[in-house]
Image (cartoon, rainbow, N blue to C red; front, side, top):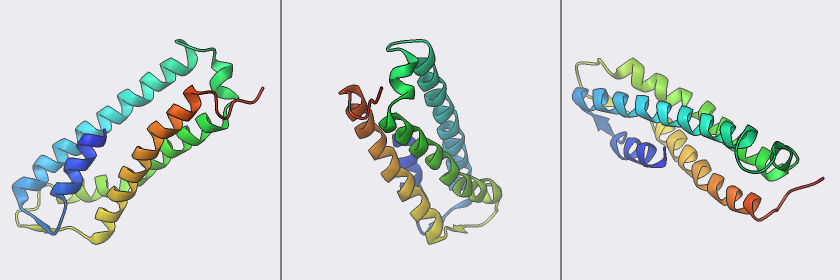
Length: 128
C-alpha cells in the first residue's frame, strides 16, 4: 500500500499528461485492492489466527490503529474521485495542491500504523 501511494504521490505533482492519468488510475485501483487485502488479513488475524480476540478488543492501541486505517480510507476518497474524473481527459491535467496534501497525510498515517503494531505486540495498551 505504502509503495503504491508513494508512486502515486510522485506522479501527481504539477501537471500530468492524459496518458499519465490513465496509469495513475490503474495504480489507484491496485492501491484500493491492496487496502482491501490488508483489511481482510487484519480481520483474519483479529478473529481467527494468533492471539485471542480479547487481546485485540481490549487494547486501546489496536483501536487507534484501526481508526487510523479507516481515516486513511476516508482520506483516499477525494484523490480517487479526482483521478476517476480526470483519467479520460484528453489534455494535461493540473493537480490541485489539496490532492497532494491529502496523499501526504495518508502517507504519514500509514507510517504511524506499523509503529502502533509494534507497541501492541509488546503488550502496550492491553487492559483487562
